[in-house]
Amino acid sequence: MARSRSSSALGLYNAPSNKGLSYLKAAHSTPTLRRVTRSQSRKLEAPELQNERGRAGQFSDGAASSRWGQNKGSMNGKDLIQESSTKTPRRSSGRPVNPIGRDSLEDAEATNISGTTILPSEPDTDFDPEMMLEALPDLERAAKNVLDLLVPASTDPVSIVNMAKKLADPKNTQSRRLSRAKSKFESESSYFGSHSYIDAEKANVLILSALENKHNGLGHDWSPDSALQRANCARFALEVLLAKAGTDAPMQAIRNVEDVFPNFFMNEVAHDNQQLAMGGSALEKDTFNLALEIRTQFLIGHMEEQQYHAAFDPEAMLRDAFFIDAADDDIFESSQAPLRGFNLDQFGGTDKYLPVRFRDAAYERFNEMLLTVSEDGFVDIEELKSAFRWQRFTLRAAQWIRKRNDEIEKQLKSQLDAEAMRDAYFATPRGSHRQPKCQTLCHSNGKSKSHRHPEIVE
Image (cartoon, rainbow, N blue to C red):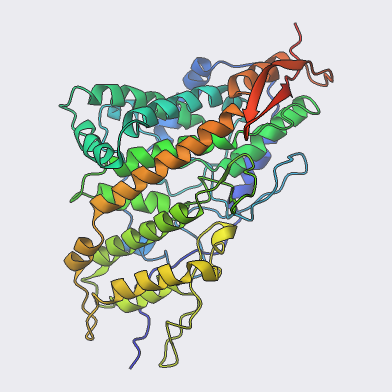
């Protein structure tokens, strides 16, 4: 007899609300007439930032149980609104859009490098695209410094995971370097919101619209996506690699990333010989595998939290997590039911069908997890944790971060750097039209090409 889905089953990918529109309006309604330094901005913003960077405790059971199964309503207070901009040349990837941002640590917590952050309950509503552009070069450098320390290119993945354990120990002398790098990263990230990860797509709209409004053609053939995606890779490394097993940190790290991966880390996945666009990735298999691992870890953590509730139904949770419109009666056949995709078009998209080429791997994972559920509805959480160890997940995360960071590094070298674009923006009078050629050559896909610097007027 088939098990009916309980009210405690998770609710995945809820319907969008309307709260996220205000910050786009606010960002464009108040033009900045002069350049404000970040030190000045911090003084002006200090009280608000202190209030908005709260890191209150764990999600409530109600919030946690709204991840899968209930496809309507709000999504933990976060809006899923996708805006289009006629002023922005960036093509849409069909991705769901959460509010820009991250959880910012307070300065007093800079020495605590355990990693995870807590998502605020309200969406960010006010952003200054000029300050984003001002902070972008330093954010890019700060993210690179974090990744150089946590995921060095010359170190094998096993050593990376083991080294991260030492770096998470405040008594370790090397942890001071990481603490300093993290503090700088937190500071620069604060200009892109108060949520855990930066929404590169929304930030792209704001920044490129500001460039276009300043001067027609400024920012043409340039994108902030790769720099912002590198920042998200750094955040992912900080939260996952430094999360200590046996604490709340791993589950919080998974909560923060589960609904934004992979679409906050890449614009699209290229196939075979398809040329990579800015923000694109060729890591199709690696990215799918990691998305599957993130879903697995989220399910394990949620089952552990819900296991003593009267309505706890682990089989229903598994069905809702892996399948779309899983039936509640004996007609349900998991081998035929449509599997749930991930939030990137090449992986089916949010709350849509997983492409056939990924079906076998996802279906196998469902069956592996289902084996731990007995006929009477009992699930052995420790068996699940043993089968899908956190340490194994961190190893795969480290491998993926390094590969993705390598792709991003090549993309950043193929376009005008963020610092030059920032300087051109603040030096160019509104309405200027001349653009002198860039004297440097950038390399993209093995070919040299010259770029044009936006005009810098004395």
